[in-house]
Length: 248
Image (cartoon, rainbow, N blue to C red; front, side):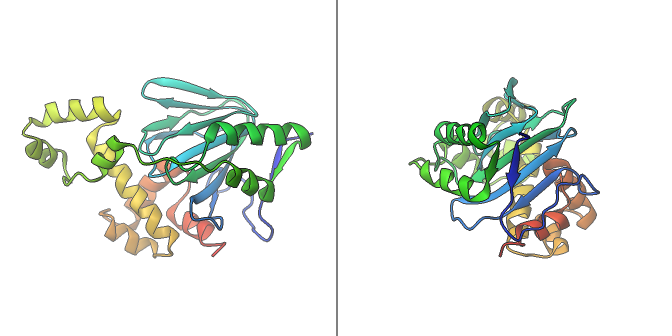
């Protein structure tokens, strides 16, 4: 039996690669699950980025590989990996098709180990995962937790440019960049770009027009936002906006 995922009833998400690639996102009716997505295909590589949410990735078929802080995480079928909020990571392309589910949740709210074990058991029993089954498993593995202190401090930083950050820290630009990268695993300019893209994602989720989002998040124009957004998340801002607003 071929592993599969059954989408919520009435949702026309489509799994073709098409112009928007192999990524599909949508929003469930849950306050702690910010969004879900599926990834299908071989060209699943994304550059270094991070999320405001915990990313819980579960592989149904194929494999996914992530690099986090110079460590390789190789995720086989029936396995999952938790990428904590604020953790810089990138994913690698594969030589064979993969199919996996991404669950983006409020930080520290769910027991990822137990959740993955439940999904793996369900996959072995019936060869597929239904959306209603997934929703129930996720709810069964809620736990207490909070945002890591380092992430909170970085998020509350008041600087916008590397030079400004260095000045506020009383350091040279080079010294500030070295220390920042050592602490957070990502250069400060990439960190700020990821923050702006995450803010764009949030605004798109509430239905803001793409052009307005580009202006509000500091991109030079809609095309600039589109290039950066697709590089980081695998889809264009317009496609993402349509997908995540579908269930509202």
